[in-house]
Amino acid sequence: MLIGVLEVDLYLPECSSLKEKRFILKSIKGKLRSKFNISVAESDSHDLWQRSKIMVLTLSNDGAMVNSVLSKVVNMLEGDRRIQILDYSLRFL
Image (cartoon, rainbow, N blue to C red; front, side, top):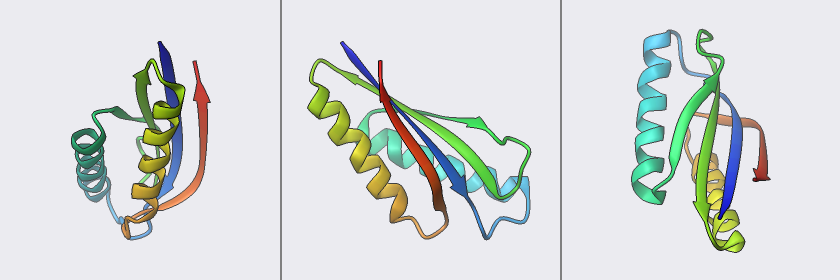
């Protein structure tokens, strides 16, 4: 079993409160979970309005499948106008 871990550092330029940030992140996490059947959680920057780090996990017996799913997650995040990806890292366990 191969586990893929994607950490994404996000900038939310239009957020002016933690409430707005939570609303946007909840929407993003819900869409990712429903579309890709993955686990998503905010892992850092909980108290900053315009920054967030999310962690995405998926697992499979097929490494190419894990890589494909996580690449599609990055592409979907890049297409979201509410956020900007500052950095991301991908690793396999």
